[in-house]
Image 1 (cartoon, rainbow, N blue to C red):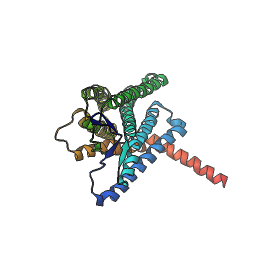
Image 2 (image 1 turned 90 degrees about the vertical axis):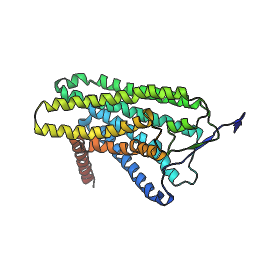
Image 3 (image 1 turned 30 degrees about the vertical axis):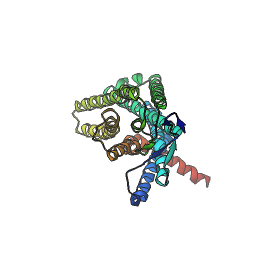
Image 4 (image 1 turned 120 degrees about the vertical axis):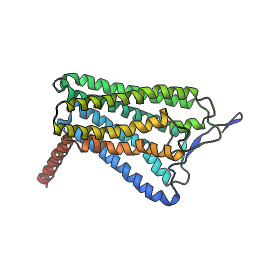
Length: 316
């Protein structure tokens, strides 16, 4: 389609992962296994929290929303990636590309805000246990969730509308495995100054501020537990906080490196690997880090399994 002297792009070609043809099957099996693990792990957490009344607490309310966010976040890119790995022409329509970008930003931003809410919940529970039920009231928990959803919907919609106003010329090859915002901006042949400005402004709100809040919450938690002078408590604190912070660092660190502090020396391979870390690896690890190592989750799993076994036995 042509308009004046410019070619209007109706679809994009996704280059995908920088791997050779002889490695396609191996990486296809690997990413398929990782995606299935992500889906099953997060569905299991949502299923357990929904069915077990003992898990109807603020912490697990946030955790169920995080599992939903991880499931959707991974599903925005992984099915298309797996399809493209088996396709000779990995294309995506213009409308499909903007839609993918919108939902990608939506669930990425939602996860960032949910991590803050969960860190604050743990901070109150450990540092102010006697005031926990008063502070983390149902009204506050609902307000935090609603605020997270409203902010992420607004921010992702704003980025998408700003992207939709740009013109894309003859070059329609995206050097990525999904419609990444920064990769699309490199293809635009119109002024992208507003887009870049909003990325830095809103990026500070969505990434930098939550990142600092999460780390300050865990720092206060560790400081509070160290005052107890209990060897067992100290080990538990560093075990729990260390595993949580490792995943949080992986998620925020790669996003900050890609979008807020991009380097001219970053190669396409390096950027793709960093994107895989927070789009594929983090959603897969979250169920294990936040839940499956959790005693309450394990007890709920045993209770539901016991009920199911007894039900099957008596129905025979």
